[in-house]
Amino acid sequence: MFARVARFVRGIRSNTPRPSRRKGPVDDEDALRRCKRLHGLAQIIASDLDLERIVQSVTDMATEECGAQYGAFFYNVEDEAGEAYQLFTLSGAPREAFEHFGLPRNTAIFEPTFRGKGIVRSDDIRADPRFGKNPPYYGLPQGHLPVVSYLAVPVVSRSKKVLGGLFFAHAEPGRFDENCEDFVRGIAAHAAVAIDNAHLHRRAQIELEQRKRAEERLELLLGEVKHRYKNAVVTIQSIATQTFKDASAEAHERFGARLSALGKALDLLTTRDWDRIAAADVVTRALAPFDSGRRWSANGVEASLSSDSSLILSLALHELATNALKYGAWSNGEGRVDVSWEFADLERTRLRIHWQEIGGPPVSPPERSGFGTTLIDRALGGPQGSAKIEFAPDGLRCTFEVPL
Ligand SMILES: Nc1ncnc2c1ncn2[C@@H]1O[C@H](COP(=O)(O)OP(=O)(O)OP(=O)(O)O)[C@@H](O)[C@H]1O
Ligand SMILES: [Mg+2]
Image (cartoon, rainbow, N blue to C red; front, side, top):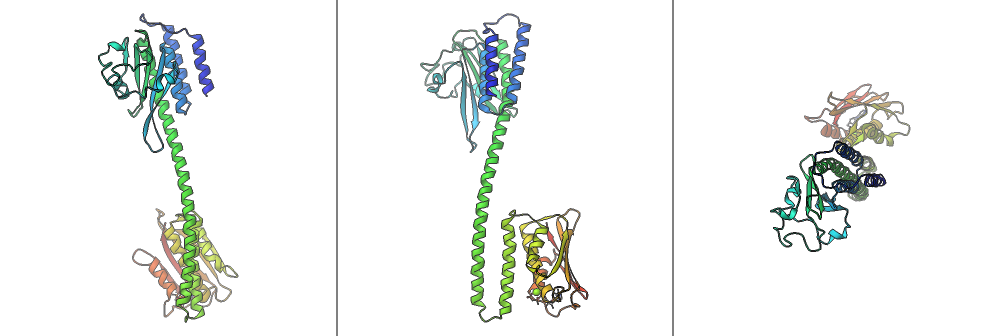
């Protein structure tokens, strides 16, 4: 792209005579040529997203077209932290000619440009009442390139933000006419659009980069959480072994199984997307430990669950599955369990899950309830919930809902 711009500008240099002082009527041919150049430049910078190249093309062409001895574009940029600073690009003069003067200060002469108030064009800037009024130089600093003819055009974005200013100078008076002012005004408008686009592009790139870094940090954190959680489970297990020394082996086993179900549910949350998990994944994972020789099916709509809902669904399924093994469809080696789910409402804010046992021994309502049914009642019942356990003779049925 840069080569294209350079060729373009070189082509113009060789084909066009340096514009001299134009004070007569506007020449049609000249106007058409300028129009074409403006159009050409607009096309080039509109397809570019590199800020430096855009400002360089703009400065080169405007300096060339106005017959300025040198031109500069001071433009505002933001760093990654959003701090504003100013850069400049030059045409017709080496960088060293400007570098030691620092950036233009907020003097009376520069004010209309940097505040986006309007164009300043002067046949002899030394005669301007605003010139030379500010310390420390009171005019041009010593060693500065001569400035007599002066043209300064603000570059303002669609949102009225001042993006920078274009400045042109000549050592002789009366070098910049109205046509030249119009041309630079046109260039400034195109430049504003191109710079806006380049800023947007850069911001999008920064955001992408930041998101990537945040994801990496999250991944690291997730690994750490998982590691700590596993350590905590081992600690709980050994505390339980110590505390329930006198309890039966069966009680030990049940506690261990529940702890491990909780572990697997949490594992699921850390190995997959942190907060959304497919319902099918939760069901399959919860029933997988009961797979050997047990028969079950899982069918339902495609839905993803929040971490809270996945956790409670995993624990409820674990309790239902252990009960099926102890008392229900899986206790006689013949029965089976069908798990299915659907959206509970049109807005799809809740998921309804059905647990159906078939082919087990005849079922009658129990006289006592233990941890399993209490968990389902407490966690999924209540005024908001809708857990229902039916001890039907041909097999236990349980329906409950979780929020999506
Ligand atoms: N799938 C089932 N088929 C037949 N009866 C069941 C089934 N599930 C539970 N029951 C009956 O309901 C009672 C209560 O179950 P619950 O899960 O609350 O307690 P538990 O399994 O006996 O003990 P815990 O769950 O505390 O280990 C059981 O004792 C059993 O009689
Ligand atoms: Mg139970």
